[in-house]
Amino acid sequence: MFHGSMVALVTPMQVDGSLDYQALERLVEFHIENGTDAIVSVGTTGESPTLNEEDHCEVIRKTVDFAAGRVPVIAGTGSNSTREAIDLTLAAMEAGADACLLVRPYYNKPTQEGLFQHFKAIAEAVAIPQIIYNVPGRTVCDMLPGTVARLAKISNIVGIKEATGDLQRAQELLDSCGDNLDLYSGDDATAREFMLMGGKGVISVTANVAPKAMHEMCAATIAGDREQAESLDAPLAGLHDALFLEANPIPVKWALTEMGLIGPGIRLPLTILSEQYHEAVRQALRQAGVL
Image (tube, rainbow, N blue to C red; front, side):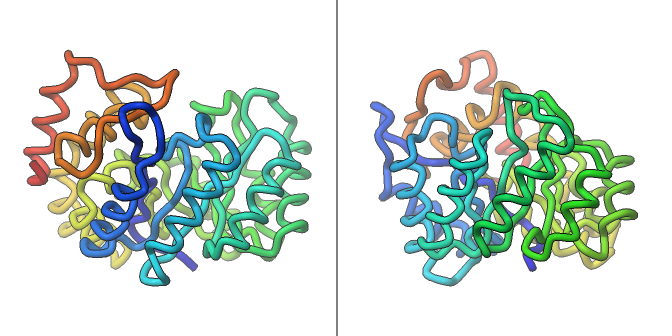
């Protein structure tokens, strides 16, 4: 249903932390002009933990409006509360989002059965296509392949964002769920190999600053052209690392500010990128040809 370079879009903010919708519109146009294949709104990179429900839903509505059907919009609507996730997913569907991305519940550490029942309940409550999201580094717990295989049988669960960076795990999921579920990498550094194995795309942080290059790399990779994919990915390797020198989205928001695309706003408890990392991020941007 979705494929290629799907940007995990930042949420632009003013210095005081208020939302900057002019910059958001500018970013949406930037991605459409540079071939981004889908926009993921209000995921981790979009600072979903610090947006209240009103902000969260408004950013999704604005993103859908700015995209105006020219590129799919996937709304981040996950929560560690099943009821809240249902409410956010319903609001995203009503706003016109094309699909929703639902992170594995964090902090409260549900069992594998609890995870299955959580995602099943959301899928049954809201008819929109849904992509489940496994990121143990953020959520403390892992969603195991057996649980994913059970969820793959639910018709409107259409994909999984697998962000472990473990290619053995990716192969296991492809083998068990590939006919029923599209697999997307959530790890830029291993995304090329993930797609060469059969993944359909990447939900990318790097695409925020290098959308054209990520689109072209993904297209080559999905086409099975390893040589071209490696050539296109090589200049991006520094970004895949530098954009995680501090917690995402701290480095990528700083990088976009350096590029003149957004202001420096970020919400506490996140802070602006530490000065010791500025030159490393600048160098990665130069290597990628975007600064």
